[in-house]
Image 1 (cartoon, rainbow, N blue to C red):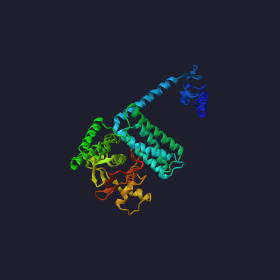
Image 2 (cartoon, rainbow, N blue to C red):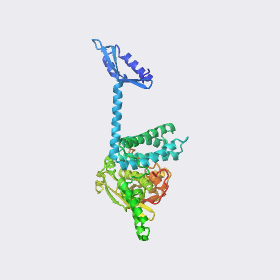
Image 3 (tube, rainbow, N blue to C red):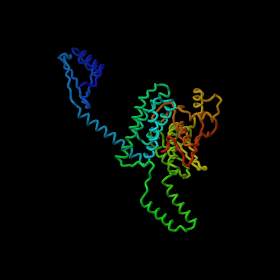
Image 4 (cartoon, helix red, strand yellow):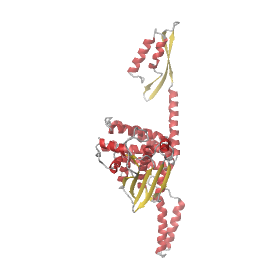
Length: 451
């Protein structure tokens, strides 16, 4: 059977052995790194692993006259190590799922399934346009952000690798290799489905999808109430309307989530994100109106908040040292306010960080030909929604790729909503601001995002 050694490795082994014999033992020791300590060879579907030990035998003057090679079959040990490693990774995934919580993972998986399914569909096309590639990039970045926030490390790492390659292609640093992109996304898809499978099969959590759990007593109670109304059909219209209103409100609890619950859930992992960034956990100031929100609108809000919170924590809120020097409290402040305006939910999000780097954003926008030198502040601020525009000095698994707010605008506008920036404070290189989001509350057809 042929080993895994390539011709170059074999040549280096021969040269090392030839140069060591009849020479001082020091010569062997200096080149011993060229000698493999383990090789493998295939026998059909099976692989055999062999451990190699190279021992120089010397004469009285310390010259090597021969080299003793000991070969040990360590296949069984390898199998046990691989099994142990798989069990370790399985345990890590289960631990992450338990810490994440059933409801959070359910919401994340429903949203992410839509985005990754769209990626797989686009990658099956015979050719990819730049627009297609940007959609795949944004979707990947969004799912990675959610996985990172929930502490799903293995999935986040897999998506980070795919995202990195998409980013290099968009920046013209790498040629488009469709087969390689398919392979990367397939790996991420498999990692995602591994979490789904473990959540279902090992933790016994059922994915509800469009189903809801109804308690049997709830069904019996409402059946009896409806039966009572049927038998008392002569009751006053006012009484009937009161009973129908009660039924409607009870059923609505299964269809809608309150904006308060949604926002609290989105902010649950701010502490983890702060620790990852080496920052203090910010104070949260939240004023919500207990607005009932449909599932598809909820998914839009959650996907948008993934990017908004990460951007605020990473680029907006300064370190505690920097904040103290500016006379601010060491910890930052995140503010969220909601209100109902007719058939819309209006969401305002802000922080007390450094604000928008208008000077840097303008310089980048002028260089890219997106705005002119005499553009006003509002036009400059609006550039943060442009794909690929980033003023971050580096790239990490958390942010810095110039994607985020463009994804937010895409999600919001596909849901027939709108997003804008409200600048505050005086003129300067940095300006405080608030994000203003408007989303419809009635039934909507949210392509690619709705669960």
